[in-house]
Image (tube, rainbow, N blue to C red):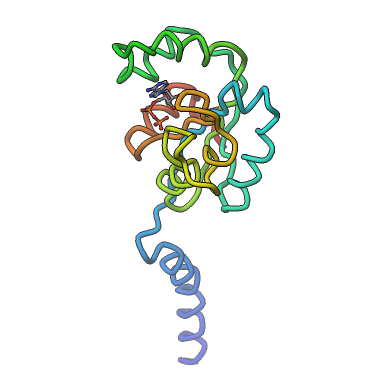
Length: 165
Ligand code: ADP
């Protein structure tokens, strides 16, 4: 009898062990926003870049195509509105429709930033998305959220909860 009770007890515990093992080592499930900028769309790089994210076990939790207007770009790039090149950012980012993707995975925010590389494509290391496909500081293929709080704000800027899966 007691063996049976012990067996049922261990069976009940089994999924908990599985769950705690998955979250060991400080790996947090996160979501981050990636925008495939006009140069990625025009040069047909979206598929190649998305394949890298999928290979890195990042799941698509939401996606949409939008033509961004100045108003939302002023919000999204509010830290740059006073820069002399801000007009160029607006002209470039609104020149075609862009693809917005929410990616989900363990430590997604930092991992995606590392895969994307630094802002300036000309100094971004080979193997990074900007280093392999980007042209310059402005034409650098993708936007990726800088940190976890920024990711939450940016995802909410472009997606309603009902649009995320
Ligand atoms: P990141 O996209 O790497 O997070 P920033 O937030 O500093 O970088 O800048 C946002 C975007 O503004 C860049 O990706 C780039 O397209 C554009 N940008 C930033 N700095 C410059 C610059 N000095 N000249 C032209 N465009 C720039």
